[in-house]
Image (tube, rainbow, N blue to C red):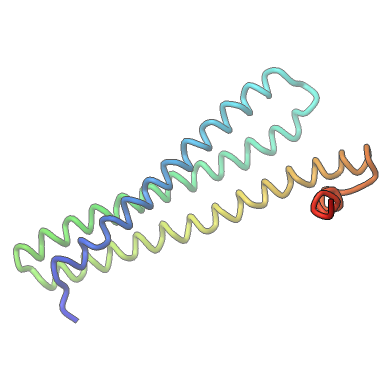
Length: 151
């Protein structure tokens, strides 16, 4: 298959949307950290839970940084690939395009792992609330939701 100028150009919109999603994740994470910091300064009772959340958020923040780095590298390599194709350095353009695709793949892989960590953190929060509700009302969150659906 011959690499044409339009092939790396197709990735531009995909990578741009991906970078927008990563930036939104980063901004949401920054808001969470600021809220958690405020909660930490105000509360002394929940220090252990808050410290665990901070460790989780630090790990996720590091992963989001790496996702963004590999996304930007992918985008940069696409631009270089297009330049090489324009200059008719086909072999070099093929290698650079392959590097761009590899960076995009790494970025998506890190994103997948970060999503799983994020989901696990939310499940821990839900189980915390479920424990409190079951002590107060003698039922779990699932039972409460099923009762509302039946009504």
